[in-house]
Image 1: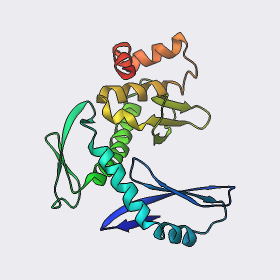
Image 2: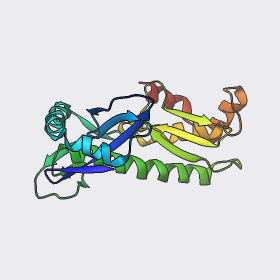
Image 3: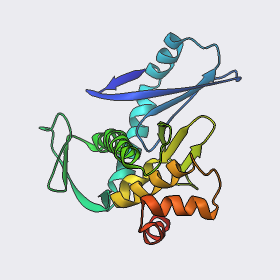
Image 4: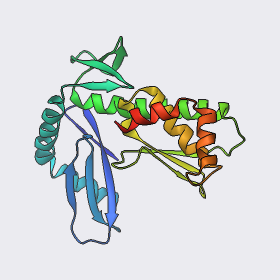
Length: 211
Protein backbone atom coordinates (compact mmCIF):
# COMPACT_ATOMS: atom_id res chain seq x y z
CA UNK A 1 0.00 0.00 0.00
CA UNK A 2 1.29 3.48 -0.81
CA UNK A 3 0.25 7.09 -1.22
CA UNK A 4 1.55 9.78 -3.54
CA UNK A 5 2.11 13.24 -2.05
CA UNK A 6 3.30 16.12 -4.23
CA UNK A 7 4.53 13.67 -6.85
CA UNK A 8 6.52 11.50 -4.39
CA UNK A 9 5.46 7.96 -3.51
CA UNK A 10 5.48 6.96 0.18
CA UNK A 11 4.95 3.42 1.41
CA UNK A 12 2.22 2.74 3.99
CA UNK A 13 3.26 0.09 6.50
CA UNK A 14 0.26 -1.43 8.27
CA UNK A 15 0.45 -3.20 11.62
CA UNK A 16 -2.76 -4.85 12.78
CA UNK A 17 -3.40 -5.48 16.48
CA UNK A 18 -6.27 -6.15 18.85
CA UNK A 19 -7.02 -2.44 19.41
CA UNK A 20 -10.04 -0.20 18.90
CA UNK A 21 -8.56 2.98 17.44
CA UNK A 22 -6.33 3.72 14.46
CA UNK A 23 -2.97 5.47 14.82
CA UNK A 24 -0.55 7.01 12.32
CA UNK A 25 3.06 8.13 12.47
CA UNK A 26 5.93 8.96 10.11
CA UNK A 27 9.32 7.46 10.94
CA UNK A 28 12.88 8.39 9.96
CA UNK A 29 12.75 6.02 6.97
CA UNK A 30 10.01 8.33 5.58
CA UNK A 31 7.43 5.56 5.51
CA UNK A 32 3.92 6.06 6.91
CA UNK A 33 3.10 3.60 9.68
CA UNK A 34 -0.51 2.82 10.53
CA UNK A 35 -1.57 0.73 13.51
CA UNK A 36 -5.16 -0.48 13.48
CA UNK A 37 -7.56 -3.23 14.45
CA UNK A 38 -6.99 -6.70 13.00
CA UNK A 39 -10.19 -6.56 10.96
CA UNK A 40 -9.81 -3.05 9.52
CA UNK A 41 -10.20 -3.23 5.70
CA UNK A 42 -7.66 -1.59 3.40
CA UNK A 43 -10.08 1.04 2.08
CA UNK A 44 -10.62 2.40 5.61
CA UNK A 45 -6.88 2.53 6.19
CA UNK A 46 -6.39 4.47 2.96
CA UNK A 47 -9.24 6.80 3.89
CA UNK A 48 -7.66 7.40 7.31
CA UNK A 49 -4.31 8.22 5.71
CA UNK A 50 -5.90 10.61 3.20
CA UNK A 51 -7.73 12.41 6.00
CA UNK A 52 -4.39 13.09 7.69
CA UNK A 53 -2.46 14.47 4.71
CA UNK A 54 -1.79 17.80 6.44
CA UNK A 55 -0.25 16.07 9.45
CA UNK A 56 1.74 13.68 7.23
CA UNK A 57 3.25 16.55 5.22
CA UNK A 58 4.38 18.30 8.40
CA UNK A 59 5.80 15.05 9.80
CA UNK A 60 7.63 14.29 6.55
CA UNK A 61 9.09 17.80 6.49
CA UNK A 62 10.27 17.38 10.08
CA UNK A 63 11.90 14.03 9.36
CA UNK A 64 13.55 15.30 6.17
CA UNK A 65 15.07 18.25 8.03
CA UNK A 66 16.33 15.85 10.67
CA UNK A 67 17.90 13.68 7.97
CA UNK A 68 19.55 16.70 6.36
CA UNK A 69 21.26 17.47 9.66
CA UNK A 70 23.21 14.22 9.33
CA UNK A 71 26.58 15.57 8.25
CA UNK A 72 27.97 12.32 6.89
CA UNK A 73 26.59 9.55 4.69
CA UNK A 74 28.54 6.34 4.20
CA UNK A 75 28.21 3.53 1.69
CA UNK A 76 30.10 0.37 2.72
CA UNK A 77 32.84 2.28 4.47
CA UNK A 78 33.18 5.13 1.98
CA UNK A 79 31.94 8.63 2.73
CA UNK A 80 29.61 9.84 0.00
CA UNK A 81 28.35 13.25 -1.05
CA UNK A 82 24.70 14.05 -1.67
CA UNK A 83 23.72 16.25 -4.60
CA UNK A 84 20.05 17.24 -4.83
CA UNK A 85 18.37 18.54 -7.96
CA UNK A 86 14.82 18.28 -9.32
CA UNK A 87 16.26 17.01 -12.60
CA UNK A 88 17.06 13.59 -11.11
CA UNK A 89 13.82 11.61 -11.33
CA UNK A 90 15.59 8.49 -10.06
CA UNK A 91 18.66 8.31 -7.77
CA UNK A 92 21.99 8.05 -9.58
CA UNK A 93 25.27 7.03 -7.90
CA UNK A 94 28.71 7.67 -9.37
CA UNK A 95 32.19 8.47 -8.01
CA UNK A 96 31.00 8.42 -4.38
CA UNK A 97 28.28 10.96 -5.13
CA UNK A 98 24.57 10.22 -4.88
CA UNK A 99 22.40 12.39 -7.13
CA UNK A 100 18.78 12.60 -5.93
CA UNK A 101 15.69 14.72 -6.43
CA UNK A 102 14.91 15.11 -2.73
CA UNK A 103 15.81 13.82 0.73
CA UNK A 104 13.26 10.99 0.68
CA UNK A 105 15.06 9.49 -2.33
CA UNK A 106 18.21 9.00 -0.22
CA UNK A 107 16.57 6.48 2.10
CA UNK A 108 14.82 4.76 -0.80
CA UNK A 109 18.14 4.39 -2.61
CA UNK A 110 19.77 2.94 0.51
CA UNK A 111 16.93 0.40 0.83
CA UNK A 112 17.37 -0.83 -2.74
CA UNK A 113 21.16 -1.00 -2.43
CA UNK A 114 20.97 -2.88 0.87
CA UNK A 115 18.63 -5.47 -0.63
CA UNK A 116 20.76 -5.85 -3.77
CA UNK A 117 24.24 -5.92 -2.23
CA UNK A 118 23.37 -8.05 0.81
CA UNK A 119 21.84 -10.71 -1.48
CA UNK A 120 24.84 -10.59 -3.84
CA UNK A 121 27.32 -11.04 -0.98
CA UNK A 122 25.27 -13.83 0.59
CA UNK A 123 25.21 -15.70 -2.73
CA UNK A 124 28.92 -15.17 -3.32
CA UNK A 125 29.97 -16.33 0.15
CA UNK A 126 27.54 -19.26 0.10
CA UNK A 127 28.90 -20.45 -3.26
CA UNK A 128 32.48 -20.22 -1.97
CA UNK A 129 31.85 -21.58 1.52
CA UNK A 130 34.24 -24.39 2.43
CA UNK A 131 31.56 -26.82 3.64
CA UNK A 132 28.27 -28.10 2.30
CA UNK A 133 25.41 -26.14 3.90
CA UNK A 134 21.75 -25.52 3.05
CA UNK A 135 20.99 -22.26 1.28
CA UNK A 136 19.27 -19.98 3.83
CA UNK A 137 16.44 -17.53 3.35
CA UNK A 138 17.48 -13.91 3.89
CA UNK A 139 15.82 -11.22 5.99
CA UNK A 140 17.20 -7.69 6.33
CA UNK A 141 16.11 -5.33 9.08
CA UNK A 142 17.50 -2.73 11.43
CA UNK A 143 18.61 -4.24 14.74
CA UNK A 144 19.91 -2.48 17.83
CA UNK A 145 21.95 -5.19 19.52
CA UNK A 146 23.06 -7.66 16.82
CA UNK A 147 24.69 -7.53 13.43
CA UNK A 148 23.25 -10.85 12.37
CA UNK A 149 21.09 -13.75 13.51
CA UNK A 150 20.81 -17.33 12.26
CA UNK A 151 17.71 -19.43 12.87
CA UNK A 152 19.14 -22.92 12.42
CA UNK A 153 15.75 -24.65 12.47
CA UNK A 154 14.23 -22.47 9.77
CA UNK A 155 17.54 -22.09 7.89
CA UNK A 156 17.07 -18.34 7.98
CA UNK A 157 19.72 -15.61 8.18
CA UNK A 158 18.82 -12.10 9.33
CA UNK A 159 21.28 -9.26 8.67
CA UNK A 160 21.36 -5.80 10.22
CA UNK A 161 20.69 -3.14 7.57
CA UNK A 162 23.13 -0.82 9.39
CA UNK A 163 25.97 -2.88 7.89
CA UNK A 164 25.56 -0.74 4.77
CA UNK A 165 27.60 1.94 6.56
CA UNK A 166 30.46 -0.45 7.41
CA UNK A 167 33.23 -1.65 5.12
CA UNK A 168 32.07 -4.46 2.81
CA UNK A 169 34.41 -6.89 4.56
CA UNK A 170 32.36 -6.39 7.74
CA UNK A 171 29.23 -7.50 5.91
CA UNK A 172 31.10 -10.52 4.54
CA UNK A 173 32.33 -11.47 8.01
CA UNK A 174 28.82 -11.32 9.49
CA UNK A 175 27.50 -13.49 6.66
CA UNK A 176 30.29 -16.05 7.22
CA UNK A 177 29.53 -15.95 10.95
CA UNK A 178 25.82 -16.68 10.44
CA UNK A 179 26.37 -19.34 7.77
CA UNK A 180 28.76 -21.12 10.11
CA UNK A 181 25.94 -21.47 12.61
CA UNK A 182 24.20 -23.76 10.13
CA UNK A 183 26.91 -26.29 11.04
CA UNK A 184 27.76 -25.27 14.61
CA UNK A 185 24.83 -23.66 16.44
CA UNK A 186 26.95 -22.42 19.36
CA UNK A 187 30.19 -20.44 19.69
CA UNK A 188 32.45 -23.39 20.38
CA UNK A 189 36.04 -23.70 19.21
CA UNK A 190 34.73 -25.75 16.27
CA UNK A 191 32.49 -22.84 15.29
CA UNK A 192 35.31 -20.29 15.32
CA UNK A 193 37.49 -22.70 13.34
CA UNK A 194 34.79 -22.72 10.65
CA UNK A 195 34.65 -18.93 10.66
CA UNK A 196 38.43 -18.69 10.33
CA UNK A 197 38.38 -21.29 7.55
CA UNK A 198 36.15 -18.98 5.50
CA UNK A 199 37.33 -15.61 6.82
CA UNK A 200 41.02 -15.83 7.88
CA UNK A 201 41.11 -12.23 9.18
CA UNK A 202 37.90 -12.56 11.18
CA UNK A 203 39.46 -11.48 14.50
CA UNK A 204 40.59 -8.15 13.05
CA UNK A 205 37.36 -7.59 11.13
CA UNK A 206 35.25 -8.55 14.13
CA UNK A 207 36.79 -5.65 16.08
CA UNK A 208 35.96 -3.26 13.22
CA UNK A 209 32.35 -4.44 13.21
CA UNK A 210 32.04 -3.81 16.93
CA UNK A 211 33.47 -0.27 16.76
